[in-house]
Length: 450
Image (cartoon, rainbow, N blue to C red; front, side, top):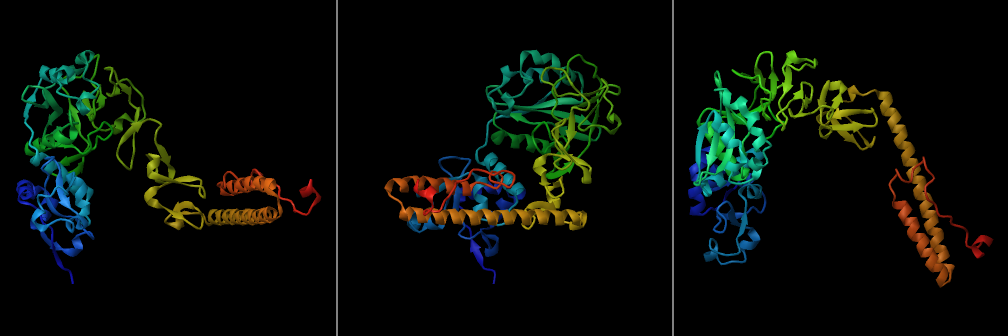
């Protein structure tokens, strides 16, 4: 029978998470308090409260700690643990997705420690103004921007000259720039580009909330390599977008995180490599990703077909049977087949000591048999090495019993070397090499007496 259990939270915590209960599954679960036992992890933490020492954290008690304090001190004891909101959810509930945990963590930080700032949209030359580092109130991803220098102002004319481009800026009470994100307003679609702030953990959420409130989609991952995935009203979407510019013929161009593909024949920007570019290298097709105001050739980037991230040409592995390029982190190499296999298509075979297709119908049975014979040969060699080692160890032990003190010292060293050699991996002591060896002789032989 599935029992009902209680997860207790303080009034201070209840007040904070009640403000965003409709936006977070975790918040709604915590507010219910009474939950089925099978939704909880064993020995889950309890008595959650807003941390008094750090507004962005939550305090709690473990079952063990609870037994060591008086019941009257549950909420006030100094023995409470303090943790970031995202770190403690897995200590309470089963099967909460990383996406839900991240959502709860972002919302909790935003509502528990409300920041003082002002959000506004700027256009034209004000975009250039707030790209400059002199306006920044700190570092973070904002301070790492490659477009922050004096020399970069002339790269940014494309932004100030095109009315469809604006920028959301966040400023503190002193007028210092906390964050910025380009805005692209197209026919029927509005896009928020990469978010740069002085502290992404503290401020990114507010940009995303502004995007949701104002009908914009925003990047799922805030980086240069992911250009196709967005979030729209809390849902992940993949979208290929093209932008028609009014002005596009410049001597210098900005570094673009998302809409980096420029067709100079039409004045269109893309967040992907258009099909009509093909494999032709022409100066009319440019990728705008230079921190020096220049551009790269049309074939400078290639798409990881699995993660949908862009990478520099030549850094991905081609997988013939799937006709795709991807990072090797997404692959497993098969010695049996002498080829790369996509991770989700592969499994490790203990019998073959190798990665192989899950679907064996894709594998030539002759290659399987060849690999089995090879493994059998390796196993025989391993057995032979073990047999030789045991014989040598036995002979050394016998000599130790019959030797004097000086001889015992030398034999102990021989024994150490023997054990070291035996511990070597197969690729060191293999059938291709003789490897180091120790000659062990019969103690009664003339050589042993010399």
